[in-house]
Image (cartoon, helix red, strand yellow):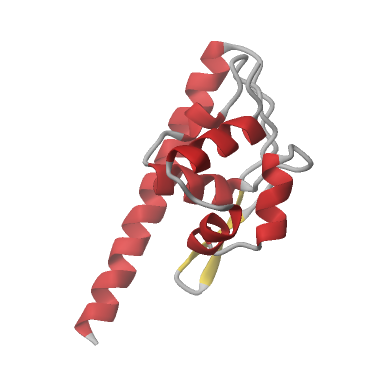
Length: 126
């Protein structure tokens, strides 16, 4: 069974990147990234999203074959205000739960991308 760490190693090697290079691209410390590859800890929701965007893959592809993964809580920001919503710890045990959670996460990603687009538009107007 492929762990998240082994998947991250394979993806990084496929893209011919060192841990330091990838950590810089993801705007995280190399030490944190090293722990993810070593399966000593898991990335939070923001970092999972960064990884999926960087590799242009769905977050679900990072989950193990059984559809199980624990994602640590994380607050998202909307402009300067923190949305009163935190992604809960997720432990998915069957495919329907996985589908429901992925759809929910995709909706949150869409909302974040729309917020990001509005911010870019404001920046470009200034």
